[in-house]
Length: 369
Image (cartoon, rainbow, N blue to C red; front, side, top):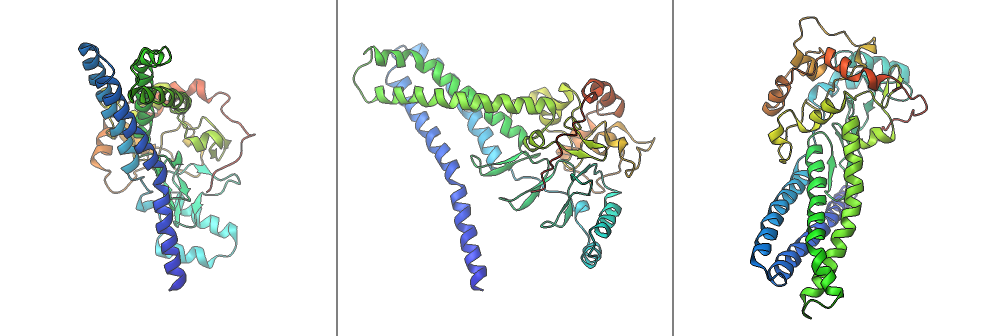
């Protein structure tokens, strides 16, 4: 009981420590609100019209920024569906086998009925020993969360959460609105920052808030801009951060563009088909997170080909597989059935250019953490 109790205390301390970066960001944002609203707009700006415009625009950006940040932090990462977990009989069968090849035969038999097309570097089925499941495409095990996360991008300490399929749109909006927040503060504070150096401001407490507000907003703008541009590039290429570092491996080899469908479809896979939801931190991503359309799936001889009677919506969800057997969440089902563009013919048309030269045998590292 003592070792178990010490482990529980250790895990509790770790959970508390993980919230320190989030608390730091919250304190910075709270101070920036005080410095901008009270010290700059109310105390330093004399023109009423300018003051009202600045406050209105600031609060719109501030609300969207906080909303996106909240959603990124508190949206639980999605885990693989029950279909990917081993049954009790399969677990016993796998434990009885000592040879790796025999275990792989068992895993290949189970994976045959699942929409799994990626492999390890050695061509083996991607299996998680800790979660006892077959990893869906683009799924990875997070050592911090100790769970397998669907379409895992990375574990972000600044949100104390895994960024993956369920909250990647929120993370992108968080980067966008935080960058816009910092740029707006920098632009509107610049004139008063110059007055600070030319002694154009009265010698009050507001002078120091205006000075540090400009410096902090400027520095955060640079770092946020680089991070936001990088993730925009990832969205355009339909890659996660892990896939950008280690390209996914298919049966025919490594392919960094294996999931890319062209800019339009790549963007809509994250933000959805309805434009009105794009700037709002509401889940609108397409799919179920367990399977992703790819022009490369038919190159896998172990997976059954798409049945001729499949509808475009089914092809979008699992490329012809009747998967999952249980209904999807209402929002996911609605999004899947409203995307007739996810047909194999459309994917082949949009991806003909991207497929050329996509294979990159030099990058053969697969993240199995």
